[in-house]
Length: 88
Image 1 (cartoon, rainbow, N blue to C red):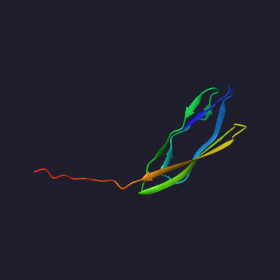
Image 2 (cartoon, rainbow, N blue to C red):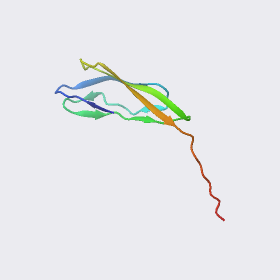
Image 3 (tube, rainbow, N blue to C red):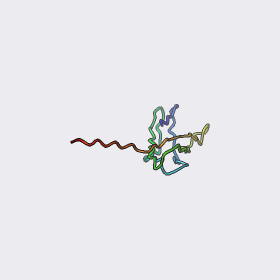
Image 4 (cartoon, helix red, strand yellow):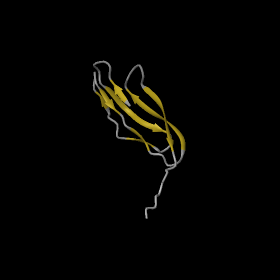
């Protein structure tokens, strides 16, 4: 996820969190997005079960127009397939 500061002012990220199952893991987010630049947030999905899981990435900042942004995310886990071949 890319967070951009479209004007010359810095954006202070006061909170970046995931609301949902622990299968969604957020890498350490930046605390400031410098004006006229962008920063990347990395969210990883590490499923512990088969099926679909959903969560929300919640970004709170000092942006006057959008102080909180909620992004829905979805991951799909599958059972691992193991194939063995016997060679004689």
